[in-house]
Length: 253
Image (cartoon, rainbow, N blue to C red; front, side):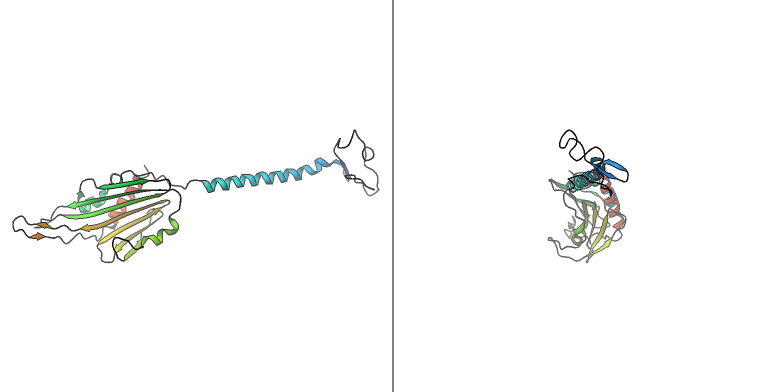
């Protein structure tokens, strides 16, 4: 009968070193196996397998730790910071050159939260009266900046571009704008009264809305009310894109 861990070759010769159980006591030394290359230590024979198994466990642990770290990693904000005064960050140089100087500094609000930061700005550009008109022309600029710090806005961005708005009902025509952020669209109201530039850049959404503000003025001589026709926004798209690009660069400083 062959005892545990005692193997013999084809000639049924016992392995060198004496019969099974020889030595100083049970478990006193590693068992041996006899093969073509003579006696080999069983612990040496099986060590590579255990090493490979241990290496696989180590690699699995490293992979799991990496995946866990990636799942908990904060999103890449691409250098965008919080805007505590969006009116100050937005210089609007191109639009000011087209439609006049700013009327005061504008109004702004900001809300910083753990999940998302919001900043908004509203400012008027004023162009002096032309010809015999006593009424200045106003271009209203509304800006919005959203910095997402948890969720990714990309999957819903396209659908949100032409979503209905609560403050007015209109149909917007969207046209893609190349080379501006990750994705950008220029929207024009069906009646042509207003324009909006929407931009997605990683975790950040930006919006620039341009509208004409009609304000009547009374003639100081006749008392008649003069109402301007409103600003013609045809061809203003390059100025909107230029000012948006400048704002995006400022928000990364």
